Length: 309
Ligand code: ADP
Ligand code: RBF
Ligand code: MG
Image (cartoon, rainbow, N blue to C red; front, side, top):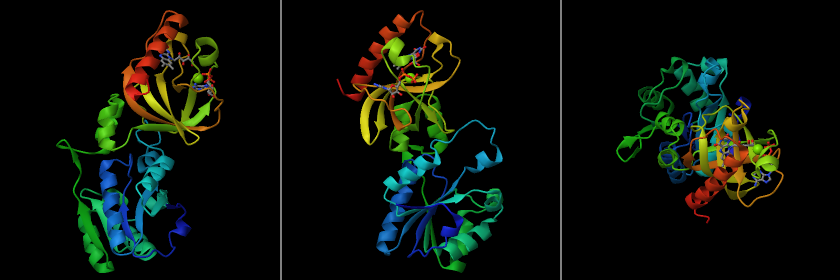
């Protein structure tokens, strides 16, 4: 997939562009359904399928103090859009200037003049442009003027309830990983760089843990989780701990994973965790020995969950 992030590059010629517009946070099943439709149409008319998105998220620009709520950092959002088979992602820098475009200006200057869009697919309650006044109705009206078609897609339901990023956030905040996975159409994940911790996992406990530094995103409820850890293109079973290590009174929140049957220095590398199931709450043990006994049980339980006995 081609990724276009610089305003000056938006002007490249696109052949019969079929486009969808949105934040696509989570790249969930609803988004995936829209991408599928965009790709199908592009194939039909011999055109290019384009996802048009923005970064940073408007709320991050306008209210940077707000607690993180995004499901994915922008790099993962783009990577997952690529996995759906789209031809192009345009990621517009969401600047004050960009935010000040009215809905009409956005459609005329960007979608029509720059991209030359032929067909647009959006969700029914999509909104865009300054003051979020742009709607499906406005797109349809402008489509007649500028010569593109617009189709509003029905929201996707799973077991009778609508998929939305806010529902998925609630499930992840509550530690309900299977529930979130069902709506995402993929496992919830965290990505980060492996950093140094207190150097205690391997030496003191016999369970080294790769500690992650992540971007500002929503983190699952603190606790112990069965995960798949992806590193250097390989996937390993693991057991992760999201918490404050209260047994040691660090007072510092950490995201760490013990990778099973693994023994390599991976400091500085990028590690991705795919969450599978929450196992328990983090507890304060009276001694490191008691914690070790519990971690051994956690490892066995994680193996059963992941099916790697
Ligand atoms: P730190 O406090 O710096 O995280 P640890 O004692 O927890 O130190 O050791 C973690 C480091 O050990 C990881 O960053 C990784 O480079 C390495 N390592 C070796 N084996 C493993 C394993 N099975 N799981 C996780 N990390 C491992
Ligand atoms: N620390 C705690 O204080 N309480 C826990 O319940 C706890 N559970 C853990 C479970 C697993 C599977 C792992 C890998 C770590 C756990 N830890 C827990 C974190 C542990 O204290 C930490 O890995 C070391 O202190 C090294 O930073
Ligand atoms: Mg560690």
